[in-house]
Structure formats: C-alpha cells, structure tokens
Image 1: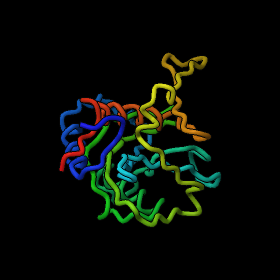
Image 2: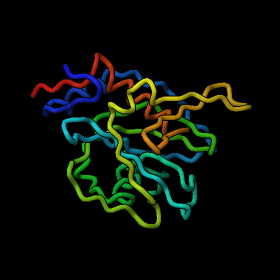
Image 3: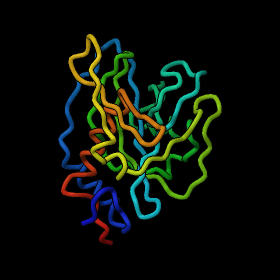
Image 4: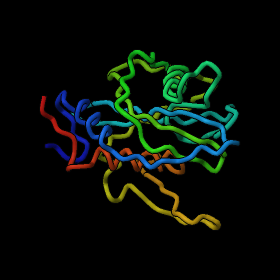
Length: 202
C-alpha cells in the first residue's frame, strides 16, 4: 500500500472504483429553481503519482467568471443524465473525447451560492494526452499532485460573515482552489486517502 497519492501500479483504477462504490454520498435535494449541472473531477497518473486536473475559467463565460473549477457545466436539453452533461462539457471545454474518459464513481451532490445543483463524477483520463482548451471558456489548465493537496499545510479554512460553515481553500504554490470546487475536492481527497493511500499492486 502506497501513501500520499502514489499510484505507480496499474491497479489504482479498480481500487478507486471500489472505494467510490462503497463511499456513502450525502444526499442533497435539488431545489426546484436551481440550475442543474455536472462536473468531472479528472485524475490520472504522472511520474508514478496521482494528479488532479482543474480549469480556470475565462472572463467571457456566462457564470463563474475567472474561477477555478472542475471541467463541466449546466445541463442542456438532450443530456439524459448529469453524468452525460459532465462528459459533454468536459469534451467541449478541454477537448478530451468522452469515450477516453473512464467514470469511476460519483461524489456527493452540492448546491452553490450561485443557485446551481451540481453532481460531481470522478473519472480517469489518459496521460499523456493533448488537451485542447476552449479559448472562449478556459483560460488555464491546472495540474496538481494529490500528495501535495493531502499535505496538512495545503488546506485552510476561513469564516465569512453570514456563513455558518467555513470556506475551504487548497493551496499549491501560487494556485488556490476554493469554494464549491474545494468542497468537491475535499470529499475526493478523503476517498483517495482512505486506508492510507492507493495501492501500486497490478
């Protein structure tokens, strides 16, 4: 068993899938007037470690301008499920064909202060792979190793007036992931860290 996000073997896919299958997600009712959305939390192995991919949105998008997020977006007519929404939006935003994305499981839905109900899906993506970020939607792509995010010094809690719960911030060098994306990330990290890490056994 390897710790700290190490995944040098090929068994990490099935191990994470098994963990997600037994992970108890927190049910959240979708408010009737909230927009529904789906996101993908993309993970992959690079340099024998697990990494997570994030996107930084442009200032030209309709919502969440300039914010760091997981690939994904709002449900559209024709999407049978929010998983389909997440895969379609991921392909549109960063150019990964949906048939190259392996969905491993789901995390707890969340509701945001911007009136979205979001269903997050954990998925493995190929590496290396040429990403093609949409110039209209994506300003930057961030890659962060899981081990760095699991470090105790990486996470910060801040309290804001009118909020009953602290807002999470994850720091990696000059990069900061916070807000709704950090809430999803926190649950993902808990799954990945369960039992001490991800096995390297083939």
